[in-house]
Image (cartoon, rainbow, N blue to C red):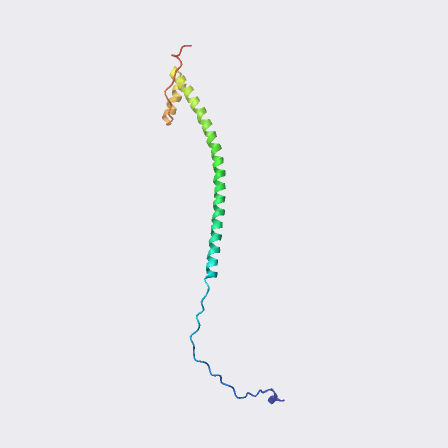
Length: 124
């Protein structure tokens, strides 16, 4: 078979002399790209913080509105309770045993009952 046809003859190789090792050049990089990345990340961070604060502000406002209605209802109930306690104290001052017992129970629970004002001494 023609094995000699497949052989490739190599001629004399040229040896290329290498240049003496020179120090590599130091490339000066521009600070533009790193600074741009830092500025973009700061803007994104501040935008995220702003969005979070706006969400929290709206939630607090809504909670405040819900609480204010509850406070108004509590004040109404307290006013009604004071009115009932004043009437009960007046009955206790007039000698009603049930009212006297109720006032004593209220005082034992820590509820302050003011002095009873009786209308007995008031003439028409």
